[in-house]
Amino acid sequence: MRIGAHVDQADPLAEADARSAEAVQFFLSDPQGWKAPKPRADADRLRAAEVDLYVHAPYVINVATLNNRIRIPSRKLLLGHAHAAAEIGAKGLIVHGGHVNAGDDLSVGFDNWRKTFAYAAESGGFPLPILIENTAGGDNACARRLDALARLWDALGDHEVGFCLDTCHAYAGGEELLDLVDRVKAITGRIDLVHANNSKGGFNSGQDRHDNLDGGTIDPELLVAVIRAAGAPVIVETPGGVAGQGADIAFLREQLGTGA
Ligand SMILES: [Zn+2]
Image (cartoon, rainbow, N blue to C red; front, side, top):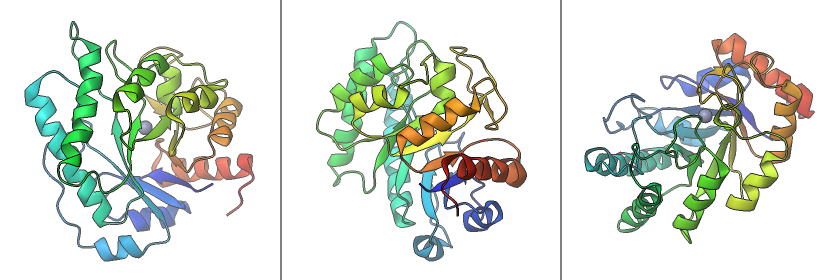
């Protein structure tokens, strides 16, 4: 089980080294902006790295929304990031499940997800796995609760799509962690990546506030049980930089008995 962290995009391999991480996740652009990612000068070095790379798509992307002015650029930005992530040899591109606005029909949001994959298919499809991540908040989210996630997976049908399970988002989003992995896999058939985070917000608070693994409102033993059951690579998106994340990675290695 490879364990790593979400790190700054300037020099991800140095960040991995500093944390003894076997995997890193980073952004390829401003996560709050609409700019397409630029080619990276270190692309060759990243492609050749032993560290597994994951790219997180910008937060502004919402391919589900009925708002054309957000949805259309979101599709383009997601596909652009997919090509840029493939260019550096990333194993997956993580993108939030998105939402529709209050009063809008969520089933149209699921269909917009399907259209996003159809749009990519017109130019040969996504060049790397797209991992849809569950989210913590909102009343009209596509991937907050598992009942919505099931409808999303139904809508995506035969399209090749992966899943990223965020433990903070699940708990704060109102899904019990006990047996969560089984319930998710019954829907998606797979978990490609775990975002291992404790939660500053309480159960079903809807708050997306990550905490270090031994802090927060989730029993760390329960977190470890979820991560073990998932059996997927792990990225901590926790505070505290090298020290905080390094301690979280060491904690997981010790609890999971993975050494390294
Ligand atoms: Zn996450």
